Length: 260
Image (cartoon, rainbow, N blue to C red):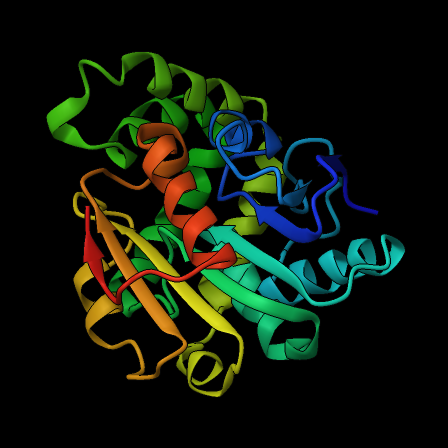
């Protein structure tokens, strides 16, 4: 079973899924700011953190099935699910397969679009680098996930993200990359999902297509979106603002589509 940690004893259950080359440690700063009304369940995705590698390819559906095993063990019913980046892709797969389990779905610096051909090719080209020069892959790629205008003040956060990435087994990283290539468009999930849908995106996020993601959200009353002045890692770059939005949106309500 996947590695997980539980904190708090609030009535509302919030499951947090980290992104690519991350683990549950990335949530610590934001977690401190989340409401005490939440019980927080942080899960290491397959091949990341303390969770095992399941095979050569970790599809988002496989990830979702393993998340389901954890939530079943914990007897979670009607919980909130939030996924960062690849965790968002996994959350979409979960919502597609098990929508009845969820109160809300939060895409956290993520998207419901599949990779385009260019992105798929970039991922394929990364296979050899991951195998033969993993440290270079991490050190070259991680800084690009942060707001380029604030890299000086984010230096410590960037190094922290590198440390976590370097602790990930290259085989797990490869399985995740191959799984992300295979994922399909999940626009239908947002159209069909009846719970609250929250999208938190970064103005300077070059890892996902923020503008296209926000622009093509379904026009439904249960959908809210926010664009924050940061890069791809809001949980590290802007933990206070992100936590405030999550607290307010999942526990209360705010006017639609705000810009921070």
